[in-house]
Length: 398
Ligand code: NAI
Image (cartoon, rainbow, N blue to C red):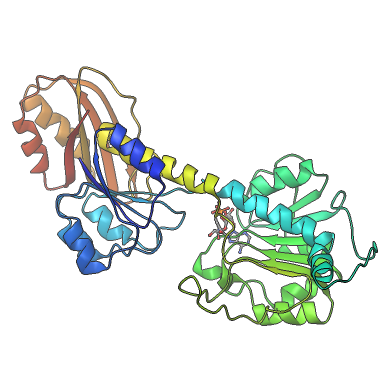
């Protein structure tokens, strides 16, 4: 098995894949389309972060590729439909940096509630101002979480353990953890919260969802955080509400336009404002998160190769069958139409292959079957399965 890991993926991923018997090549940067096509010749597994574009043109040439690991949360950089159509599984790391984002949000809530930004600036300017004015404990204050997904829910638990009262608003029905209270409307949350923090996902409909009307609804002196996506918030409106003093602080980690590289100028309406913490999209950037992402995604790639496991795949039906020593496993991905399982089993019967164990799962336009058979199966059965008109890909694993 040959693996290509791009963009400086954590060394733990290399260790895991090499331990599984793979030959791993690493490249510290992203590759453009022609370079990537050339580099994928003979490669079964590709690992990328956010800067490598895996386009339809790349996938059309990647004849040996079995799976792609996005060592990131997002998978926008991969043409998922084109990957699915070729039976290429895609995996990502949906929650390996959740805790890192939560840590940063909590640190910022405390820093702004104690006005540490101002105190720190004063001290560096030689000003000793030992006053309690405008500084509060976070205990007993209302935290309003907008978007109660992986990050929002984790923040809810930790904030409550620090004594905050948690409210949340989510467009989906979500289980309220601990003593958190669900709000039926965003306005209900905005009118009650001392701190409003956004953790919604990046779906298109969320563009500009938080603007002048929402800031106006927030309580006087409230604090605002956005560690989700930059395009969700109208920064001009945020600036106005900070300048007028309606909001007492803000922390922003994500921006509608982020500089392409290290050292490029950061341009924003929010620069130079008091009690505003600006960070360069580092919510999930910790060594622990990178380590977690490396281990998680490499493990998914290994298990897909070894056992055909698609658990938590981004684009294929989810299926995991425990390893069974002493047998072989046929992994069959097909178009999700009636009668495929019957056809597979008839073919196996025609070749006198006994089925030891079998599991089918479907998702959208694809169905996926794992079938465990004995080691003495006739090899031509794989060719027969590949020849079925519904077959997208068939592979022998285990
Ligand atoms: P998630 O998908 O688990 O949760 C998002 C939640 O927001 C879902 O429960 C969804 O129903 C809800 N939601 C979506 N639109 C909404 C709306 N308009 N109003 C109310 N609720 C809404 O996502 P996760 O993992 O918790 O991540 C949240 C955000 O954090 C994402 O945008 C992600 O890109 C971002 N993120 C930022 C990082 C950083 O470095 N700053 C690192 C990791 C994630």
